Image 1: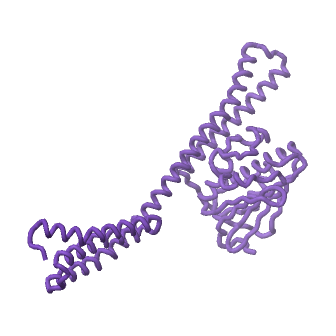
Image 2 (image 1 turned 45 degrees about the vertical axis):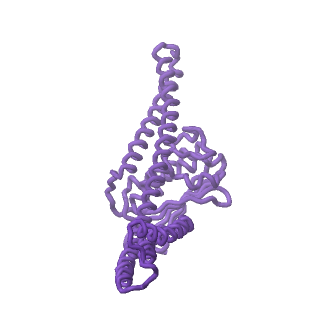
Image 3 (image 1 turned 60 degrees about the vertical axis):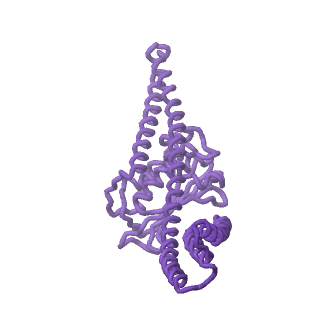
Length: 344
């Protein structure tokens, strides 16, 4: 056993450095494993290195003093390793949560950029048309009564579309900010479907599309907002009309199953590309086969219709999903069934 300071330092280094080296190799080996394993290794390295250094300094003579030191180190290890594992798990959860939050923030930022790009483009088109037609009327370039009427109707139509886009932006901002407050009351989905069917039938007829509904005789009661659920169905039907070719058909159906009410909108369009399915409910995402704004003559064509529908359904504690059929696509809404509603 060395007695001088330099000798003590040398023996301590000789005993502890191999342990540190082995620990470094273990850390390298476990770097892709669970964080709790790495935390346990990190705690064991200094304690085992201390024990190895003490043993080396003692000249491998297992005296009572060494036994007491080893006992203390063993107790410390027994306390710190479980604590390190618990802390490692907590840190791992925090790390995963932070990573998810960063991914969500990046996704939200990407959606905001896409929204600004889409809305800027969509606002510019009708504004340019309104400006051109307004200047033509102001400069009396258009003087014939029929042409003046046609220009005025076009200005009103484009103004209504701009107003609808502003309404979409306002609705979407409330959904994203969590400021959406709905007045919930018992609602029969069949009545909403009848209203949406009647409101969109003229547009479907102009597009030469057959729009029909199939519903059970029993009531389908859910707790919801009449206005919000009507907008959800209207957005889904508008989307189906915009992507169904002339001669196609759109079917709205409803029913109940397993304590939930469901409503489906099926179309005979080209379906949705597999790459678009995961992002179909994102703000301002139109997909690779989207039509130009206003192609269907319905709604604002702001690219927020499906995102608003998803947000409103979520506010009702429901679920919205989409899938391709053999021909066309199917959008399905599921809402909690109110007590007293049909269930079959």
